[in-house]
Length: 417
Image 1 (cartoon, rainbow, N blue to C red):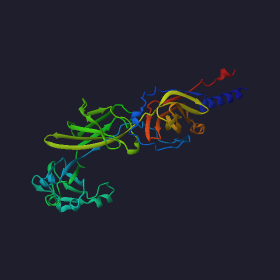
Image 2 (image 1 turned 135 degrees about the vertical axis):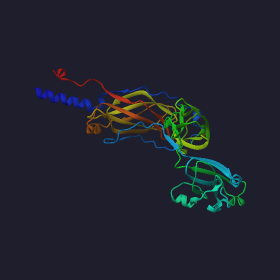
Image 3 (image 1 turned 180 degrees about the horizontal axis):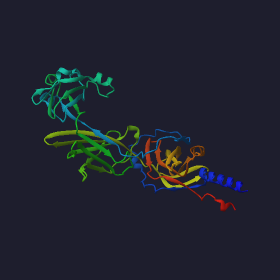
Image 4 (image 1 turned 30 degrees about the vertical axis):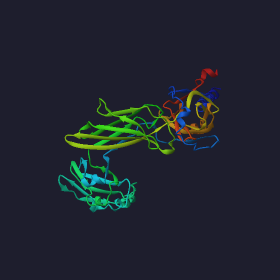
């Protein structure tokens, strides 16, 4: 009789561990509040790209995968380069280029290639420093640059020269005889051996519309942070400038700018971009750097509210929908392994056409993978993302997770007497 009781206890414990139908969902923290979009914000959005109507619900195993990290960490961009706009007249007179190390790679890109600019060759270009001509160690035309995989426009040329810290002069005295005043160029200077690095970091990779976008930057060298003058702006996916950035120094030595002026837009055109230009005078040495980065801006056409239930091995999430369309929700189901560590079990995904108003999307809780994992609770669904598939735009990314709590404690021997 005792053996039968023990077997029954073990069976009940197993069922209470694996049957998530007996669990109730609780937020690990309240989902962040977001304001839903209004119709005025949709004027710049393209027509729906996804008109699929069929609902889908699926999952795939993450057992044995590496631990997941927060996928909304900021991105760090670094630069040892800068760009200057110029024209034929300035190149005839000589364009001043500050350098900070023993090597410079200079690229000259015609903005409006003409017959005259198509014929640029090594003999047309003169580089001097401290009244001495510098020899060009490497010269490459656009065909050679493209062969290396570099995405350059036609008639671009590049050269590599040995330099010293200071100012050098780039000129094209012979070529400018055939160039016209309308010929314009972008000159790019890259210093691979320089100690001066401009860093730019966004606080997140994805922001909600009207959320404060924070951008930090610092000019680093062997001596640490350096003072600098910095300007910048943000452009939307179609390339249009939307916000100027006012960088101010912080107590820790870096510079910060922020804006909350951004509203969502379809990703069909690309990402939002940060463009910055910095300059500094360090012990009489001029340093110039440009650096850019990118991020995603969500468009809150819907939001996940706090309504949710677990039923028949599924997790149903309530949504407030401001704009009808096809929506997708995804999340990661995790449990506790034998070492007491949180570990992923499965990626959960669901998509359906939703009408304006109250709606829901349902995620399967795969019992086969839970059994296969051998993990125990508390089970958690996090890394939750909501997307608008119709407009090809992210809608909401939650920092909060959902913990699946047992409705009651597992039964013990006293309960069976």
